[in-house]
Amino acid sequence: MSDKKDDKKHPKNLERIKSSMFSRSLSLAKLTVQAGASIAQHGLTTALKNKDAKQEQWKNLLKNQALAISSELGELKGSLMKAGQMLSMFGEHFLPPEANELLKSLQSNSAPFSWAAIEPTLKQTLSAEKLALLEIEKEALASASMGQVHRARIKATGESIVLKIQYPRVDKAIDSDLRAIRTLLNTLKLLPKDLNFDAIFAEVREMLVQETDYELEARLTEEFYNRLKGDSRYVVPKVYREFSGSKILATSFENGLRSDDPLIQSLPQERRNKISLNFLDLYFKEIFEWGVVQTDPHSGNYRIRVNPQGHDQIILFDFGASKTYDPIFLTPYRRFIKGSALNDRPQFFAAATELGFVRPEDNEELKQVFEDFCFELVEPFIAFDDPRNTNGLIDNDGTYDWKNTDLPQRISKRVLQIIRKHSWRTPPKEMIFLDRKTGGVFIFLSVLRAKVKGRDLLLKYLEKVQ
Image (cartoon, rainbow, N blue to C red; front, side):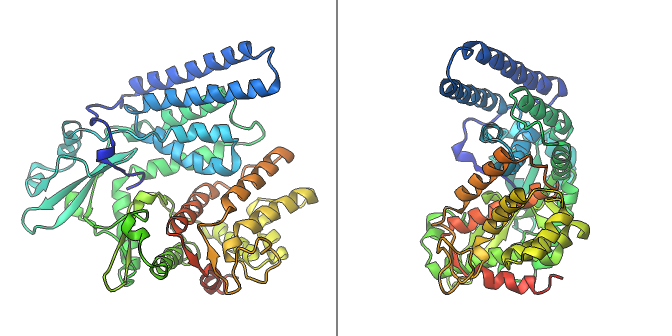
C-alpha cells in the first residue's frame, strides 16, 4: 500500500469524507477562488515594489496557498492527494520549483477513517458469512490517500492477514480532482505555457483508475508472487481471493522493518550493501526482463525482514501501480540507458531521437545540455576510468557511495538550466512513472547508505540489449 502512515502519528480518526461530487467540487472550487483572489491581491500590492520584494511576496503567497490546501485535504483524501504525489515526481524535473512545492502540499498527512466510517465498505463487498470467518482489528494498521489497511485473523486457521479497504467513492472523484489540480495550477500561473500537459494528465488519470481497481491489483500481486516465488531474496504477500473484491484486497500479513528503522541502520555495511544490490537487481529485472514495473517506490511499500543468519529479505507491497510497457517504447529506452552508461554517444542519440527527447533539427547547444543531463543521471553506474568520473565519486574498485553524493542537487540544476535557456518539449508520457521509480530506488539506497558496485550488476543486463 502506498504512502502509508503509522496511525499513532495521526490526529483523531475521520468520521466522514467529502465523497459526493457536490461537496468535493465545492471544496476544490473554494480553493481555486481563493487562489484567484490571492493572485489579484498580489498584483495590486506589488505593483510598485522591486523585483526581489515581488519574488518574496510571491513565495509567501504560494506558501499560504499550500497551507489552505492542506487544511482542506483531511476530508477530501483520494485522488487529489495521490495525483499530487504523482505529479510532484514529474515536477522535480519539468515544473518550476514553486509548482512542485504546491503539488507536494497535496500529499498532506491525514488521519485514517474510523471503524464506523469504513465498516460499510466491508459489508457491501463481503457477505456476512465471509465476514463471520474473520476477526478484524478495528484500529487501522496503516492509512494512505486511497484506502487504509486493517489487520485480521482467519478464525479457522489462525492465519494473520491484512485487508486493504478503499475509501468510499474515491474512484468516482478522479476526473473532477484532476481538473481541479490543473485549474489550480493554471490559476496560479505555475504550468509553463510552452509545454503540453495533456498526455501527462492522461497518464496520471490512467494510473489512478488502475489503482482503484483492487481486482486488477490482486492479479498483479499474484503475477509478482509467481515471478519471485523461487527467489528467497524477496517476499510478496499471498492473495486471499475468498476475502477480496472490487473494494477490498486481502493478503498475508508480512512483518518487517522500514529501511530507516534503527535496527536496519545498525546492520553492518556488508549486509546493507547486499540488501541494496538485491533491490537494484529487482529494479533491473523489471526494466530489462519483464517489462513490468512497480512504479510506486514509496518507502511504505517496502519492508526488510532481518534474518539472524544474514539472509535478509525485502518484502514488497502494493502492486496496484504496476505498469506494463510496450516494447515500442521499452526497446529504445533500454538502448537509451545502455548508451548513457557506456558513454556511447551514437547509440545514446539514436535512442533519444527515437523516444522523442531530441530531434535532428535541435540546435547543438540543446543536444549537449541534454546529453550532460542524461550522462550525469547514470553516474552511479559508470566506470572508474570513465572521463565523466570528474567528481571522483566512483572508487578505483567501482564502488559508488549512494549516501554521500550531491547528484540529486546537480541534476536539479541541470533541469533548471534546460528550462530557463531552451524551449523544451514534454517528455514521453511513459517517463512520468519510470522517473518516479528511479527516484525511489535512489532514495532507498541512500537511506541504506549503500556503497556498492552497481555497474557490475547493470552490465549483466546491458549485455542482452540489442
